[in-house]
Amino acid sequence: MELFLNSFIIGFITNFLLIFVFRRYPIMTKSGWVSAGILGTLLWGSLSWKGWISVVLYLVLGSLVTKIGFKYKNKLGIAEKRGGRRGPENVLGSASTGLFLALMIKLNLANLILLKVGFAASFTAKLADTFGSEIGKRYGKNTFLITTFKKVRQGTEGAISLEGTIASLFGALLMSFVMFILGFITIEKGFFIVCFSGFAATIFESFIGATFQDKSNLSNEAVNAIQTSFSATLAILLYKFIF
Image 1 (spheres, helix red, strand yellow):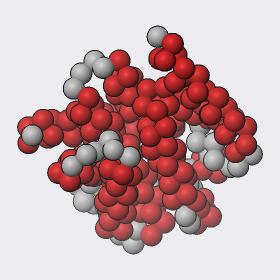
Image 2 (cartoon, helix red, strand yellow):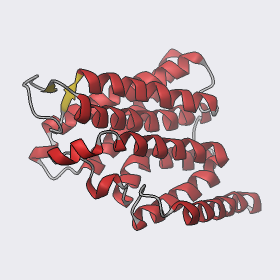
Image 3 (cartoon, helix red, strand yellow):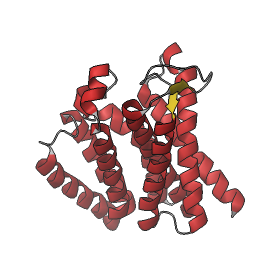
Image 4 (cartoon, helix red, strand yellow):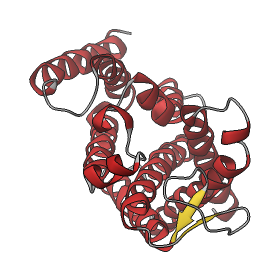
């Protein structure tokens, strides 16, 4: 029990110090930093520094790609709100699935290999989505609604473009590589399963956005949670079926 608690205490101290240093940078809102601190503490306590750094890298990469062409996107009214700063709803919507799996790993409640694959796939899906969305809104020359392939304006829910799709695939490859280096994926086939699941979940997310988001009260954060859960579930099933 003491070792169990110590890991969370270390996580809390580490996150508190880093947030104190970086809170002035335009990455998150004040409440977003609080949410990130809670998330970081739980991740460090559950998966040690490797789990923590994987999500930090996701947040950093996602924030950087959001800034690409921000003035142009803001002019069109399709830029992320608050100047691209992440709030608590963004943090929780993106990380709720991964956090759930991390806690399951800590408590050893299921097959650890499958849980780690699901954890990797959840954040791979979210980075792929962020890359595709932000690059597509800035550089997508022709944007189509995924359900009808009718041409629509940039930033439309459920819209896809060639440029954004390529960016999504790159984001999935990049995050899968991070997870592979950190040991959440241990074999090459696992790498491709996580990458495929993350990319497929991004396509699925576009379908949900086009079909439901503008016609219901389904929030963007809820869609993010559905997307990451889909990616994690798909990766776990594929890994279990193949191996």
